[in-house]
Amino acid sequence: MNLEKSKILSVLPLLGHPRDSKRITMLQQAGFAVEAVAFEREHHSGRLPDCPVERLVKIAHGHYLQRAIKIITVLPAIRRAIRRNHIVYTSGPDMALTALIAGLGLGRPVILEVGDIQRAQVSSGFRGRLTRLLERHTVNAIRLLVVTAPGLVDGYYRKWLKTKTPALVLENKLEEPEAGADYNEVCVRLEGTPLVDNPLRIGYFGVLRCDWSWRVLEAIALSRPSEVEIVVAGYPISPVDIPARAEKLDNVKYLGEYRSPQDLPKLYGNIDLVWACYPPPEVSDPNWRWAQSMCRSNRFYDSCFFKKPIISVVGSGDASEVERYDIGMIISDQRAEAVVDALSGISLDDLARWQENLSMIPREVYMYTTETDELKSALEGIAQKHF
Image 1 (spheres, rainbow, N blue to C red):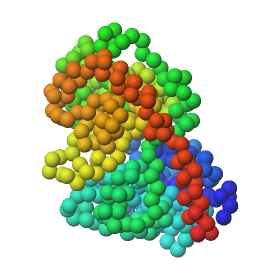
Image 2 (spheres, one colour; image 1 turned 90 degrees about the vertical axis):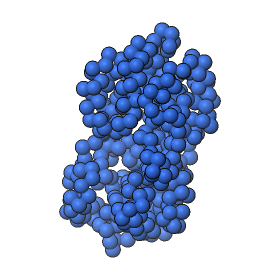
Image 3 (cartoon, rainbow, N blue to C red; image 1 turned 180 degrees about the vertical axis):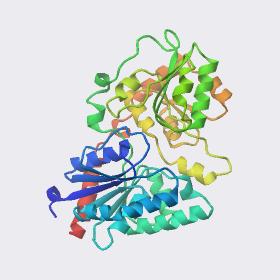
């Protein structure tokens, strides 16, 4: 099949997720014509895809029965979109299963990309067993599994689900166009010296859905009003009243939602440290702790590019890299007062060492290099077998 004439349908659970839009751009750079069908949700739209999009029904987070009914109503529309494309590229197991059902009998190969592991996928109850059963069926029926971390393949899909579907790792790295030619050209630089001329500025950006993170940052702001400044930007989910609570604190700034990648240089240029902590897994939930430790956050890649040291939590996917390269602080005691004490101990020497180490990290750790060619080659092989 001629790659220049091949078309890909992207099936999205929501519109505007940066990783999904980034992948669409990568597919276009690989030579495919791409269109998308997307469900609508109340969610942060940080980056809209640059391709034709057919919007489907609006679905809510959770409410699984209601969501399933709504998905069933749009199966004919998805089937029509599948029919006019050659390959179906889905985001998340539920979208892959939806595409497999909608495309029954059409013979279109389905690709599944997975960004992380959710609690339901590793739980020991009935819901977890049912989720894994459906996912095993789905992954065995697709032609390529794309994941954002090697551990997702080896730890979950091979050992837990016992699947043998070919897999490709595409981390959440930065693209050349979004990163620019050189760090010095795109990143705003702070005037003065943190801890001397200015407060230590900690940035918390993205989908703001971690109650624990907000409680800790609020405690830091309250305990060190003249020494620390918290800069928050993104879509508040938990707690939802972050903007109102930030207004009550003189040293906390909530900047609202932002566009990715356009606004990243200004955001990261105006901070000293990146807050990249997520909810600490419950001690009684070792499976969830294991799953969380396999993935790196977008903030990790951003901090590497913008040369901003990162604050991570022990046991996370970021923490292993922070320790390996010595590019920030790892929080081990997750009590708010302990975190405040730990941050109080950061020195100018620490910041200088972390930034120096960031400057020496190989570019391929956080930037795409050969990934587009790897994806192109994998999809060409699939296309040649089916058409």
